[in-house]
Amino acid sequence: MNQRTATDGRRGKSLRLLSAIGPGIFIIGYIIGTGSVTSMAKAGAEYGMSLTWALALSCFCTYVVIVAISRVTIVSGYTLIHCIRLRFGSALAIFMIIGLMATVLTSVIGVMGIATDVVREWSRQVTGGTGVSPVVTALVFNALLGFLVWRGSHGFFLRAMAVIVALMGFCFLVTMFLVHPGPVEFIRSLRPVMPDQSTAHLVLAALVGTTMASVCVVTRSYLVAEQGWGLQDLKAENRDAMISLSLTFLVSAAIMASAAGTMLPAGIPVVHAIDMVRTLEPLAGRLATAVFMMGIVAAALSSLFPNYVLGPWLACDYMNVPRRMNHRFVRLAVVVVASLTFVVPVFGGRPVLVMLASQAISTVVMPLLIILLVIMLNSPRTIGDYGSPRALNVGLVITLAFALLISYSGALGLLDNLREILSAAGP
Image (tube, rainbow, N blue to C red; front, side, top):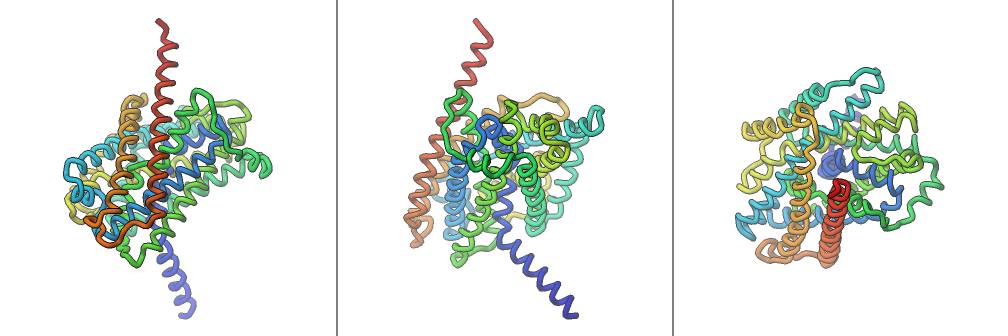
């Protein structure tokens, strides 16, 4: 009886711990998707660990934004989009929703395309045949995600994300230790530089953009609301945000280090995440390839999962109605979004132009979101007497400057690529 009581006590403590850091775990899984894996691997393969400073700064800025969003949500008593609607009007709130959903819809197409390609390539290496069909992989992944969404419980939702994120983080950290040359070389490679190659602007923008993603930070408002945090929980919220972004930095740096330890010395570039799967086995062995592949699959699931439900969440936020995971409208919306994941597996190709368009919208949404947060946090109309701390205001100004700089860098990178394409095409 005493042993059972002790076991129940330990289980209760574990559940309370998960409840306390659940929103942070969710953010980690949402940020580190296949796009993030590709960006970190590309940065590591081309520049080693020299862009770690950019990753660290982007994690810090993301921390500032989610703390600001959490404060607005807790103090005002409303979730983010509804706050924007009340303070600035419906037109701006709808624009934000459109910008966010453009990113979501194109993201699910690309994420599933990358995940199914990776599974096919890895299974082809293992079996020597043609590999698992992308359509079959997409069906299996959607069945799993559909089951998780259909359970309809917010607590179950967070626990499922915790398992997926734990698997993803474990896989990427193990891969780093399997392939990196050693601690001395690793520390030496952290020397910060600003590369001057023609591709540096785009690589930097992609690295930061996948971390400071507007769709990821907006979900923080719903997680805080579901958690039931109040004014007395502001310190707990800050701690949760700090833990989540610290772990995001650690896992992202592990992906970068995996590429820096294998592909950089061999001079092998990364264009897509699948490139690492193709080259890891001859360079680092089958175990490293299998572990990294599982990490990519977990990253895909952890970003698809919230993307499927973000649309209904945004709609409920705008109308200020409860978010019910098991509502018929939510399930219908999930089916519609999930159907888009079959675009690449069925028709092939890569929706490059659509992805570029969504990224262009995202570069507008994030700076705009930061400006709106600054205004709301310093407006008695929104948060009454609970003014924004000076440190948070300074952090938001730094974050806005960094976001604008990265948007500019991304624009330069796209122009450089366009010039290369035009020069290659000839007169």
